[in-house]
Image (tube, rainbow, N blue to C red; front, side, top):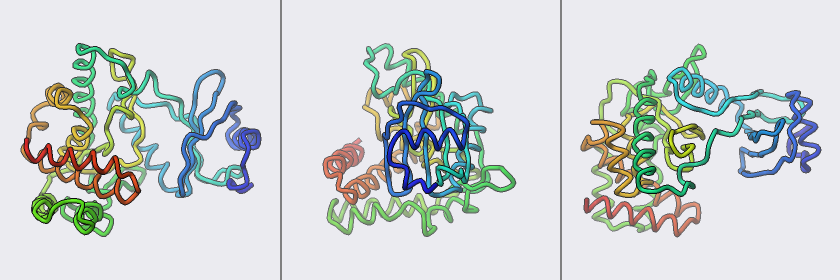
Length: 301
């Protein structure tokens, strides 16, 4: 059966049952894109997610990431099943249990809870960064082990698929001033020539929607779609971009000394201007304006 032909929940349930032997009920689509689809449903009373992807190389990498995180003692959802080429669904499919708790960004927290949890979030990210990866950039598998696609950090940033297009888009479409573009170009030159001894496993999108908590502890980490092998400071900057000044203070304390490294400031500016370009390109004009505001606030800090 071609997955594109599965248009109703009952047919999808039957296809999943045929391929995985799981009876997942009340399926509801929660995300759809050109190359991927995500559904949520109930398996014996617990919420699960069914993710389908046209690119069959991605889920083996993600399984290896989850394996590395579990070995490091970090909380991730349970993988209930994964198949590269399921006969009925027709696309690479992964079935995951829902993470324990609720997204940190959706919790109503008092000041004390917020301090505790953002401190813990910093500790968790630092522990993730202790997972070292050979190579830099896009994650691939070699002999079932995670590797970065590029040999060095400069090669990663200067490669064809390196993270350059969005900040250049911001400059070319006059979303920032010529002076700001020159400043970002200087930052880009520093980052793209930066020698880093060894890459860490970085999340690249570490924010309150991807960090789960029970109100006292960090109970789950999700969405490693953008995970790469990179400089830990780049990941710290990605996380700080989403945080308020108060959250940043305790997060940095939780992470430790590296979070105060001056290079983090350069990375935050670069992350912010890339988000300006990416969001504007996608038609997310309000989001682009917010990212630009963050960029300019960071310039003044």
